[in-house]
Image (cartoon, rainbow, N blue to C red):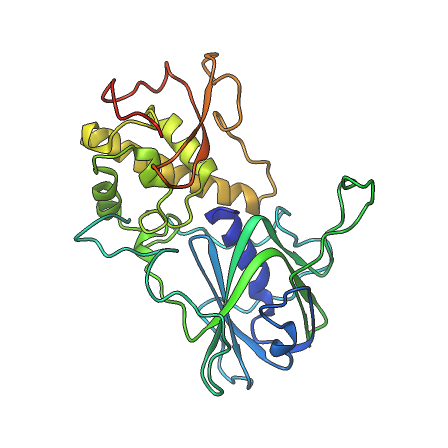
Length: 324
């Protein structure tokens, strides 16, 4: 699924529509029922980790919605994910672990339900994107290649929202559910100004491979497989190194690399520059060494492809637990 920097770009694309009324809906979602958003007003939008939250109300509010500035609706073709933004929203800067730290992120309690909240209550729509999830503004996604049958079939949007101002949003490859309010803790969001370094270091210090901890959204919300691989390489840490065996300075360096790479990636998105990786999906590292690729993950958990350089990233301790 898209990682924190991509979802923050989605948030920036949606923000100009805050304060407008939904005048027409569409999309293939059967669980959400797009028609339920008809005539509602988009009053606020928030982003936390890999999730986007949109607040809809039945009535128009008189005051300025949310905390962000009011932006002009984007023009067709200029605001799809990855396009350059002439007025980038400044990224937030430096979070998350085991007891006594309170878990947060995607696995935290209080997740949004699937049913529409009671009439008169705030209606927050939670959007969780799939592997190729995206948001398009004032245009639809087009097929880049033919399918197995040889047909050039365009992707089908899950939700389409047309607004009174004349523009529209199209959401692709995502899951959506209603709730009364987003229950989140920004202290574990790697791109939040409230990201708590102390909690992040405590989480990484556990006696388990650091590559497991990094992908735990309770502690590093918004961190995905790309950031995991790049941060570990830049910090010179083997993905299966036990956090308890690493020095405090090594853990500090790893957190620094997580925040720096994520912030740089978000900046590049706003400036329309291509993402630059050093180890992810590479055959050689920048030093010219052959890269190792293997699916790693906790026993019984999700296995993710991991790239590392055995020479630049020595394992600590040398003999750790066998990978299941």
